[in-house]
Image: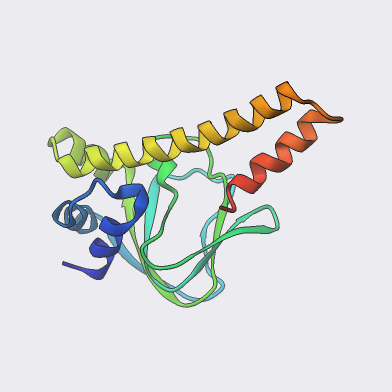
Length: 165
């Protein structure tokens, strides 16, 4: 089993995957290398794939702000497997490295075959989205119960900070 498959199986967002299922996903993905400074994903552009970082580090940025630094085993772009909306952030390589890119067509092909690995990926993405929505809902409830000043500016600022956790 590849290191990338092992790292994916240990990723909290995909904890439902067995190591064998993670390996099947990695087999369907394209392996790509990158150099420091490379743009892996561009905020606002269409996306159709998820990346599993195998080597190196990547900064995730919204606008000109870095909201996260990811290391091997982390994933990014998961929403593009389900949602045709533009990318919500950019990914800029801090170091040289490599990743595995799983595109939407490969995932949907696995679903059509009844592969449980694809079902577990969907469960992981759904869990992540539900968690984020729960956090945003909590922020909105706090503001409704005790509004202070410009509610929308404060909410926007707090929602932006959620991506940095």
